[in-house]
Length: 314
Image 1 (cartoon, rainbow, N blue to C red):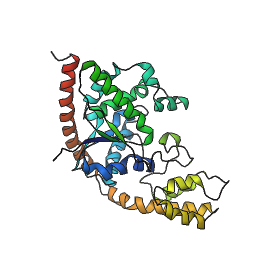
Image 2: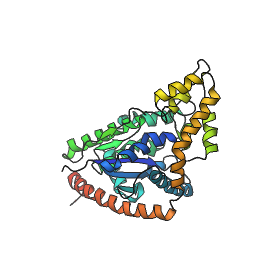
Image 3: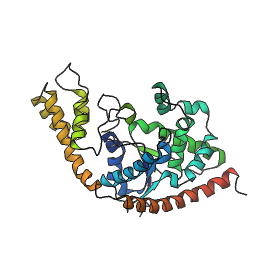
Image 4: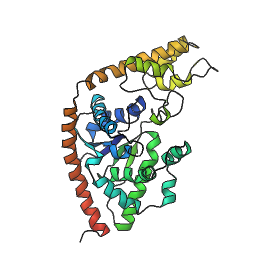
């Protein structure tokens, strides 16, 4: 029997998750994680590019783990760990940073986008792709499920692997992104990509009232009978054939269509919200402690090889 491929994915612990996170990362991982040798990371060091509140970061870390489990991840079937518990991530990121150029990192879409929007361009934000490359390559992850907007980061990881392999000898596997074509980029309430940075999200585990408030704020296009921004989110929850009937019957009635979207979101989220409420902080601590031990063992095994090849092991 062939060994399972290794898979890795993760989410920043930088705030309340939204349905874009669910469809772009959580659901794909929950659907596929048992088919692979799966690694699931809470990317708390990545969150430091924007976060400055330690108590909020601690709360976000706990919440992210609860979110993963509530959406269907079995903590017994994955290595679920916190990035900061595996210091080999930042060690390998530094090595990669010494192999790539500044112009190469300047081409990162996420960096250019944030700078264009006037957000602080700290060095962590600039070097973000190399820490993400380290996250992936430390575990020889062959499959990396990400949203469409993260595709370039996987390309950067492949480039880091190639730079190292060409310089020091074959060491790292070449990862491949796994993107749900039906989802791609999940639109926000303003039609842009759903993102906490843009304040255009629908909360994943919000109350029904909070979900309703977000959905009712979706920007609608008055030039046609079908509100396109509403429809693009709605088709994540229902088939397009079902929606065709609904939208034809309510042509021009934007309020009714938004109310239908609220109900469809609630039908999906309510059971997960109930499960999430049963997960304790103690449960989270135990899961991360176990996952941290497993992740460190695997990461250190790879770093022993890396240190020897670059020449720092005497």
